[in-house]
Image: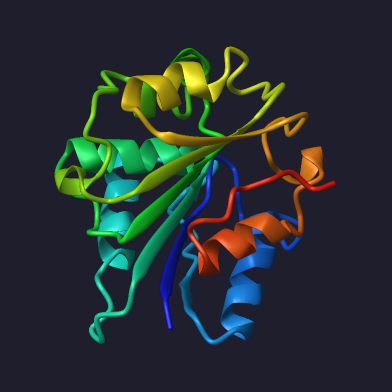
Length: 195
């Protein structure tokens, strides 16, 4: 059994139509432990409160099970901030999906603090030993230059680009997302779009 921590983004109230909600149900149905917390005040997030919530929900499983983090959108910036602050949980692997660009994040007053002074230098993960993969879609309105430009290349990440994927959310056709489920159980799987 693996323990999964799923981190949502800005204004996300964990709707049933989102791939993260679908994934949580699928993983539980396969016998895994899933932590999918509602982060505090998702419409007006406070970085310090989100960091505290990550620390609380990111405790290692007592049984030594593998611990995997999947973050979407602003949840990716939460992860980056936690790593920079030395507060990221010791995950076995991490999937970072559709992060907003620093300029876009800075332009939205409710979340601008997440981009303020964000250092995008390796290592991305605690002690540089956790495998991390970036998944991003072409045409993401929240990262128009491409997440590879802002995150993947500067951080030396393994990357999967999803043609036409947009922000990889329900508005772009991502409710059920089979290849992410496959990656959860086999990290060698390349994350693909929904065909």
